[in-house]
Image 1 (cartoon, rainbow, N blue to C red):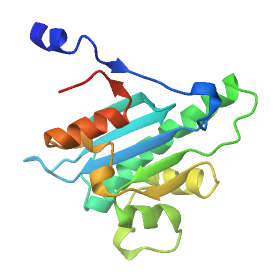
Image 2 (cartoon, rainbow, N blue to C red; image 1 turned 180 degrees about the vertical axis):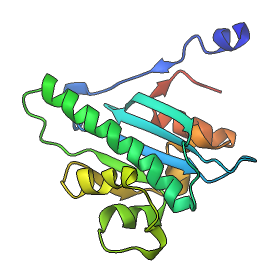
Image 3 (tube, helix red, strand yellow; image 1 turned 90 degrees about the vertical axis):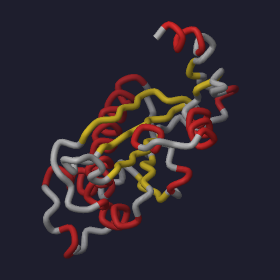
Length: 182
């Protein structure tokens, strides 16, 4: 532990908005692994970025077993959407005008289609009401945009997968983690 602390003494999150040039919106990156352990429970991760730095992140085991990788991604996206709903409320309390819509980045095309389109999806009819929140309360209401991001550019991978050194460094830089040479 002491060796780690000594080696990361200069590491910290750097936020930047010189001269107010950056949009004030939040972006959330969500990712999930699907059933990777013996018990087949998936892991999910989420990173919230504002002003080029991570302001919130977490990784955890999912509470229920996903029946597909799409469902695991939707479960992770739902957690990200709940975080954005909380950030929306916080921002409204702090700032007078908050006319921006956050973006959720997901690397699963099936999950994105499900979040954007309310038509009947035969492969997802089993997905619980709990996870409908991301689509019905956030996307359809215009409170959240969802966009595809290539898997190699998925910042939340750092919380859900073992990454090669260069990918790890790329994502730490994207999270605003300065001073890391690792």
